[in-house]
Amino acid sequence: MNSELVASAAARLEWIRSRMTLLAEVREQFTISRPFAGHRIGMSLHLEPKTAVLLETLAAGGAEIVATGNHGSTQDDIVAFLREQGMTIFGTRDDTQQQHHENLLSVVAAQPDILLDNGADLVAMIAESGQSSHIIGGTEETSSGGYRLRAELADYVAFPVIVINDSPLTEMGDRHSVGQSVVESFMRITNLMVPGRRFVVAGYGWCGRGIAQYLRALGGKVAVVEVDEIKAFEAALDGYRVANVLDLAEWGEVFITATGHPQVLGTDFFEVVADGAMLVNCGHFSWEIDVLALRDLATDSTVIDTAIERIDLPGDRHITLLADGRMVNLAGREAKGNSIESMDLGFLLQVLSLARIATAAETLESGAQPVPDTINREIARRMLATMGADR
Image (tube, rainbow, N blue to C red):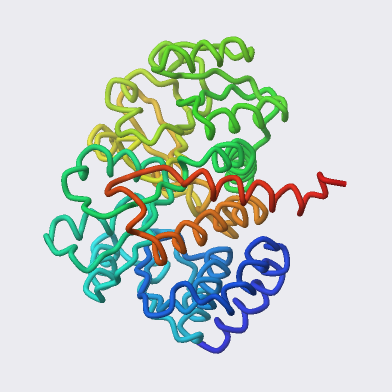
């Protein structure tokens, strides 16, 4: 069975690796420069094919890899393939939340000196242990993790952490990659059409902008919820209906959270939301929809299909929850996540930022910080060349 999983992953990776041309170029360079020689990189990130190409690139640069996925998105054939390549990988698709916690502990116990984090889970565990003297720095993939690093974990991070989503390149990419993947995932999981359906997008950051844009392009009717007055004004100028989520509770048919903040949809919303509404989250943490409060309020629930659950509410109403409130674009059958090209760009930001940590951590300040401007500009030049924009 393990050999079958490895063969399955190898076949999938052949196509994906061939389309990630930015990583291919830097991987070849890393085989010579070996920036990670002597370093152990501890990772918590979705374990799917594009991530495997990222790890291959780090390994080509001399890194020892100790990693786990995120809860609910690990792909078992990718795990088997990476283990076959000599990497230490923890986790399976069916891990419970407790097992996922133990996987994170196993990565921390391996004492990596560089971190590749997603949602600041590894940093939080290291902060709790009080043992961080061996860590020289790391990266954080998400805006949600960036919030944690600058708030609850700010006093515990005594090493530089480069927040990848703070890069203007990631912001531009997210508008299209997340917008496309969330809408595609909604259609794939539910098998429902977008045209004419009423959607409410909570959050008008780069991800929310992209989701709203792609929904409207496919004929959806879109409203936006945004607490920042300037972003709300921008959404209004872009032609979207802008209102409070409670005011839209009876209007919306599908509610999509894209904020990075907890309890965007809570008990007060559940008590008034229209019968039959669908709830979807695309943020890193499942906390944007208060699923625990929803289940406390529920009178019954029924699993309809993979990533689809009907939850009955008082007053003879029901809602449909997708993916148990977790990231919808990595849920359901044949989950693909963001596009290959967008992840090629995002992971190039990762590897060059990690290389800066490995070779010149002393030039960076402690704590969460954006991708250095020199890296952003180097990658922009590489992207322009790849796109043929200089011809």
